[in-house]
Amino acid sequence: MAKQQELLQPSRCNATSSRDGYLYESCRSCSGNKGQTLGEDLPSLRSPADWQRAIAQTLAEPAWAWLLLGDAAHRPGWDAPAAVQAALQRGRDLARQVRSSFPSVRAADLALALGAHVARSDEPPEVGWRQRRSQYSPRTCEITLYTRSLLALTELAVRFGLGELFTTAALEEAALAHEIYHHLERPPQSAISALHRRAWLRVGPITLALREPAIDEISAHRFAQELCGLVLSPAVLDLLYLHSSPQAAESLIQQAANLPVGGEKPKE
Image (cartoon, rainbow, N blue to C red; front, top):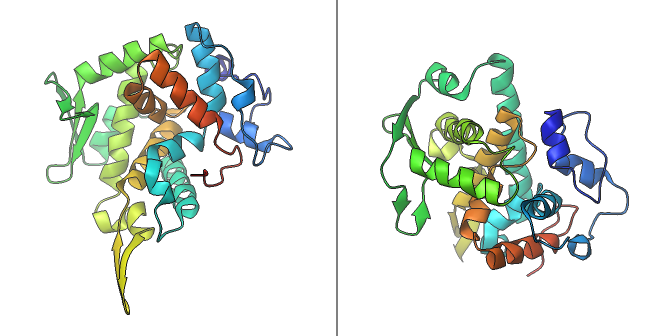
């Protein structure tokens, strides 16, 4: 853990949290940061080390959660900040609960202990525009890991200076943990997104409310990060995969840098 903290130490905040060791708590505790952005402190992105510092500085929590939520953050009919905060807390708290019951169990063995089966697939992970690294089937309680995708994400992590943190083994553990969360959150009506629905249509006393699936993914990513003891969320690699060219990644970094540090709802 100490090596991971050193790897992802941001240039703006040199403190580390003694409770969890997670980077986001340290940066949020710095006085005077609330409501400010980090854009003016971005380094020149020329090397993996530069990318690593910029990513650690801008894509810590809750920035990655807001970026995953995307345009849904600005849709009317719900309290997006409350939903994001609840999703992050649900993932963190559930992971701590599971880890207290299974202190030193690897994710694959944990899945079996919780009644889920693990399979590995060498099939192409692409489904349309989506790239699957793992998948959970509630009908069969089976978690599938897509080995090609995990290898590709490992290469992506190296390219952006995160190879020491996101090794293939670490990514496999995180992917399993992500799907274990979905296994534990059955049935769907108990999911965090069901508790924070968005009012889509109101007709007199009748309200049609919809779920935002990204809320469940935010919670699953936070669960995986906590369970695996990572100082940076695996969600960061999902974001970088969608912005894998240097130009797109730099745009993502800049977008994250312009988010409020204190976790407020981003401006449109």
